[in-house]
Image (cartoon, rainbow, N blue to C red; front, side, top):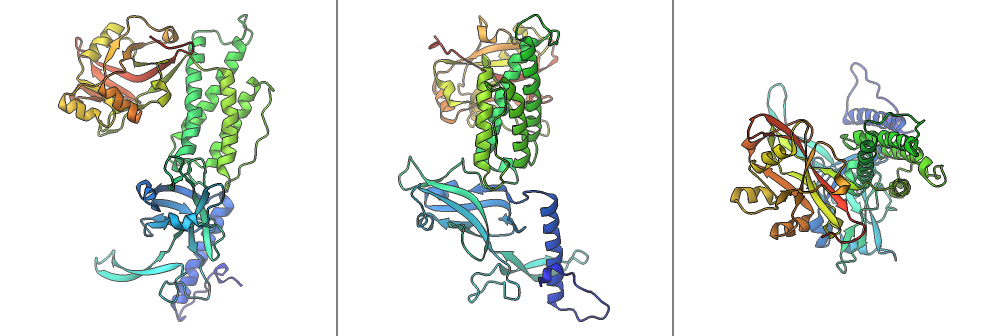
Length: 481
């Protein structure tokens, strides 16, 4: 009979030993774990994790921080509740297969009922180690040393290790660039509790979100001011209305989920399947493909499948003639704490791409927006350097008003456009990190709603809210002059 399945019978005058308290604690813990498993499907996996990339280059896989729940319900928090754990790649190399890949697991020894579970020289595979820590009486403030139990997690290069609760946390592969070195394979996804904990997966979903956003921008502008009816005499308008409806529905759902604090991958997978079903009417077969059911232990392949199908459909819809990427900022107490920045795609370095800065506002003529930016004290350059460029007065990137609006950007409203000169030493720095940032003199601006900055009109002295965005066009016919 499993003792933890029974609640302790407390009675007046009973002789109490540590066994009573341990049995009571195990009962409560097991009831809580069972309730979580019954009510919340797939409630195990990685909630957050951070590896030491520099240590991996020297031959050690090390977890600096993590929050993980194992299948059995055990939670691991590093460094709050356990020490930083590591494993040598020499141990990993011993179990490497012909595919030059090794899956690495985090493990915790099982609780052995009826046996000793505290680590010592005679019990090296114990679940816990004991440490003395000072505890403060909350009423009197008096201090006393108390013995606490700490879990003893470890990294294992073999998922068949006996006597351990195990969960895969990453997959290593031999690097193609650096002979003999291992690197973490981003496309392998362990069981997750939060999409945000695995960068490759989140960025893959974010790409779909951004691609849909760009399509919505183009479709909505072409339909702005149009009487929305499917019985239109204009060929294809009904299809475009339906397409915009499905794109908008999928985008708003993805936006709310991607901006959430925690997103379980099963929820986002369900929404991606729904989006695929809605867009399938625009594919060649007019019907959705067969997809695998959600598999919490095989997240990577199922996501790759649905994301690949969505990409195909989006390619069929067609690319917009431009991409729009808003600048974002971090604020604290109403002040800009980091540069107003945007990430660049490396492919935009090609001469067939052109980059433009767009300042979006309403009710202000283009020439006045031009004057506002010219008379504002700012610097534009590589994000990590731009504040120093500003402080030292060093040259940054130059933006110039456009004499002629490019055809691809002709339909954009309420936006003043500037060309970004891609030359000089600072552009080389931007190419190195693919990160472009603005830095402003703090007294020159205020922070507005959303992504907007509020600059002062040099003549009227009124506040003008501006949203900064990077516009990218691509000449598919050849090189731009």
